[in-house]
Image (tube, rainbow, N blue to C red; front, top):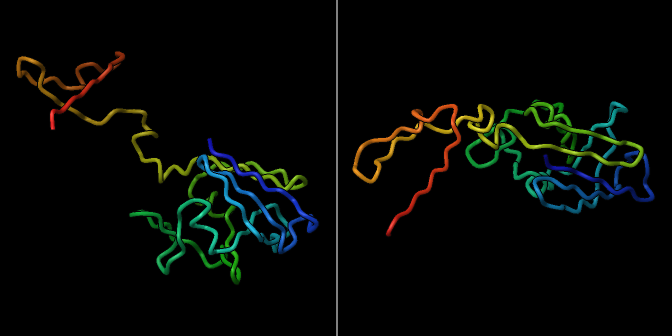
Length: 154
């Protein structure tokens, strides 16, 4: 699970302009400004331009996009130059823990990014030839532990 930690400055309580450090997916990102939740909640609002540095997503007309994945986002997730990172996390099924007094938010993995194979914990269908040229399917070993070693000469 990734984590996000925000350090508070003289501008306590989520005021616009408070600096932050966000840790996500093993990276630390220093943010110069965050914004208060306009609804008085604990949501973390970050500059739209900081989003790619935080989690690799970019805001485009079709939504928040990362590589070949685009998540449509409602207009309520954006306010001026700010983007509601907490609401986006909820939309994509990302776990979030917040300590608003300490200004600390913790973000987990984004399920849509890590791929469906991790959700099912099932290896993909795979058939290879053994040393005698006979096909061996990974499905034959279902329920057993398997170590698959591959090698190529090129």
